[in-house]
Amino acid sequence: MTIIDGKIVAADIRKELKEKISELQSEHNKVPGLVAILVGSNPASQVYVRMKSKACDEVGIYSVVEKLPFETSEEDLLTIVQNYNSDDRFNGILVQLPLPEHINEDKIIEAISPSKDVDGFHPVNIGKLMIGQDTFESCTPAGIVELLKRYNIETKGKHVVVLGRSNIVGKPVANLLLQKKEGANAVVTVCHSAAKNLKDYTLTADILIAAIGRANFVTEDMVKDGVVIIDVGINRIDDDSRKSGYRLVGDVDFENVSKKSSYITPVPGGVGPMTIAMLLQNTYKSFLKSNNYNSV
Ligand code: NAP
Image 1 (cartoon, rainbow, N blue to C red):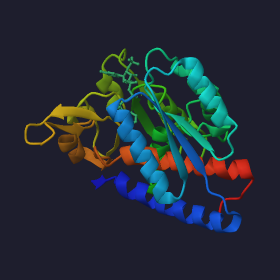
Image 2 (cartoon, protein in one colour):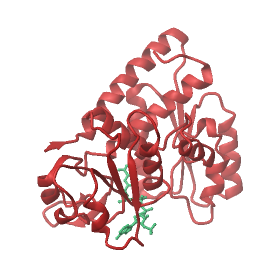
Image 3 (tube, helix red, strand yellow):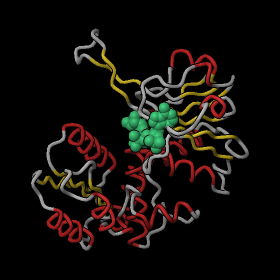
Image 4 (spheres, rainbow, N blue to C red):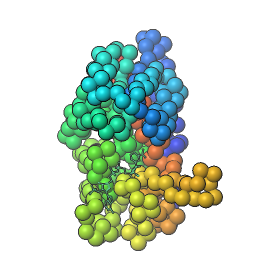
């Protein structure tokens, strides 16, 4: 059994990006820019935004965090997003979700220029992803595909079972792996909460991607020998032995399922670190496109 180490792969990607960005900077005296818009003071969102801007600093992406009060109106936020759309310093705009309830998330995402939508959430980019056109792939699904590629895990003709059909993980990862392309070309089944006898599906998976948000939900009796497990779930469970009083676990019972797997991602340290790495990669890609630079 091989543990798929997302921390190492993400660090490799950041190193590669840092080199490419530094080369472009010496050639053109320009670096990519990313603005993160944070509305309110949700503690988890604050942590995510901090991690993203730290990662930008590491690779040489110019990053700004636009912190807005919780009371910001939808109209004001729309204006702010539109201003960043026309601000050449920024190749990527991300609006940290969730937004306060008085703001319509769909409206805000649709206001971001698709050419700066480095989260890959804009309907135009999701549509392109679905029909196999070049686009900004949403970061967690792109990170999963990248992990499979970097561990040389064959996907062509394999049966991939995805648990979960959210717009940010389940649906886009299923669409990415379905494409008739290198690193994809799989036969994909998507399961959700209305699925009956889930085990009938999971037992036929060559690659099982769990993205449902239920601690240790996938047990060893649900998978076949040699399965590849990609665990996207991040769940807090009580743990008195920790100072924090909790620990993070995935959607898969790692201890027992790992014994039957050929490859498995841990939680934390599997898919998680890849999400930010892909955000950086998308920002770099946007920078290349908007300046008509070739990749170095
Ligand atoms: P979500 O929007 O809550 O969607 C969960 C999906 O799982 C839904 O499609 C739901 O079905 C399905 N589901 C729930 N219970 C099920 C069951 N018993 N059997 C079959 N399907 C079931 O979640 P999400 O945003 O995709 O996130 C999923 C997990 O991934 C969460 O733990 C989240 O924290 C984590 N996550 C991690 C990263 C990362 O960077 N590593 C990024 C994003 C999310 P219905 O559609 O029928 O309700």
